[in-house]
Image (cartoon, rainbow, N blue to C red; front, side, top):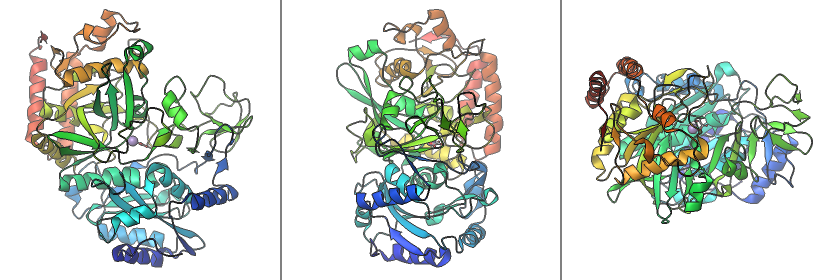
Length: 595
Ligand code: OXD
Ligand code: MN
């Protein structure tokens, strides 16, 4: 097959990788439907994909991974920059030469008897000044078909790249999925990514976490922009004006749900609505005095369990065609899919995510808790008309948040950018099934970037502070917590569509339209400012409790944060100043002032 590019740097790197991996065959992915169709057919024939009911789920397929390969592997993820201190204490590091040798030894002959697929892909709109291009070499048809959904691929990428040498190099070998030799490795100084012995999305769809976050966070620092683990959404008010916010929550904490929110009926009637620009990653740049965001992806890699017509109809509808499901259950009655939380009527007969017969009496879950759908963004009924705008959208507010049963109130606003960076830096959340390891333990996850920041966390916070100084009209920064529980352990806030009430407050504050109560943490809503007129059944007493700040818990939180800062080292002095100031406000028994 002829090459899709004459770019010498691309071709010589591919030659080098070919010599190591020794494929039987090389296939360039052109992006043409005919080629993709043939690959789908081949994948079905080889048992990699199961074709689902074409009437109910046209163009949809089911894939099951190896049972030991179901989530991101943070302990096997490495940032191999030249100096260990530049990776910082939150990343695993190995000296680059040693790691290359190890990777190339594993890759030696890894494609023997197999095909090397070369995927030219673009993060962001091909041809836009903000787009970045990469090549992923893989022996997995599953990766090719998922990359086709999640990114923009094919010949057009090679044409846009031309002779430029600033592309991202990516090698992926499934090998024998040996979990002892699983590696997700990044070499930021060479713009290179290598994934070994995995075939799980977050580890091997390299455009996503590896490139658009870990490598791009390095590029953003050098080039003066930001790569963040953030959704982007537009809020339309009854006057038809749309304001954009971006929000960073840790994995599986509801970014996709918030990005596709449907407001409560009463608010819809007034004309409120939400437009989704992205559900996971934002690239943010300064322009015309403001911060602008693009979503570099082209699809959604969403968590299936819990997604339903009730919790997130827009996400569910997005999966109704041209979608790849991974590790969900197969409903044998009509050859469709099922997962816990889809509805209240589990299939009488199903095949579970491990490929075993399953009935509602089975003791184990039918779908893996981190089972996923890969759905094209264009399927989303509330996709923003700005989705394909290469300029992106101007951001009025940045929202941080996590899963905290106690401590964090429903919402608060930071006093200013520096204080907002502090709020993001001490973010913490209960862990979820998105990564291997214990679920439900509280861990610090600054800006939701703990697993994704491709350099020293202290330098990353400094970059945030520096960026703030360069934006004439920076977004206001907020923190939310949808997951606070009452004494009985029940969620105290209804969440989902009702989160719109909090978003309304956030954009009113971003535009300086309403006052607020000043607390030790920051600005909080006056209780009557959270719109409860349109169908929220919550007493003022409960609302006050949701917004309350427990002084003792927060003093403890400050102590933990200080310990965390000490572990990180290299913390900008401005953040220590903010921590001291918070502690002082708490100790003073800060009086609530109403603006
Ligand atoms: C994801 C994650 O898959 O954050 O988006 O794990
Ligand atoms: Mn994510």
